[in-house]
Length: 77
Ligand SMILES: [Zn+2]
Image (cartoon, rainbow, N blue to C red; front, side, top):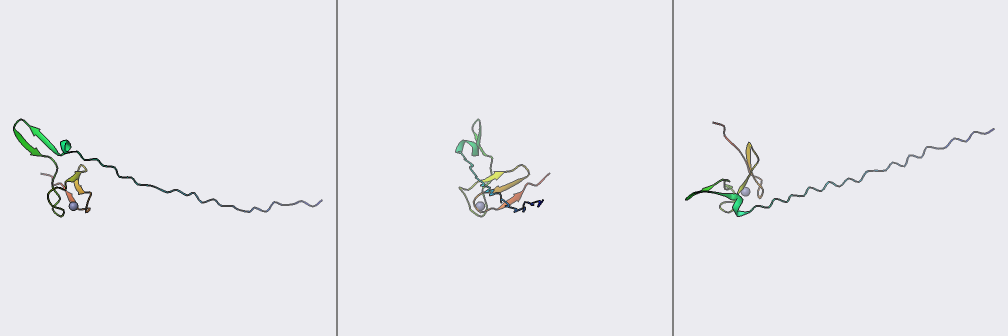
């Protein structure tokens, strides 16, 4: 009796995980400004690199510019 061994041909399948990091951050003008009565207060800070027109995103403890990547930590007082 000839016992045939099945050759373990390892067909290793590589998981093609293509992580697509989609950044869809829609920024509306109404989100950038907070209007209290007659005072017109700006919530978000302007990026010092990009200049006026480019607002920095609020990430809680830090502000980050989505355009140039400038990050500024909030100072706790
Ligand atoms: Zn910037």
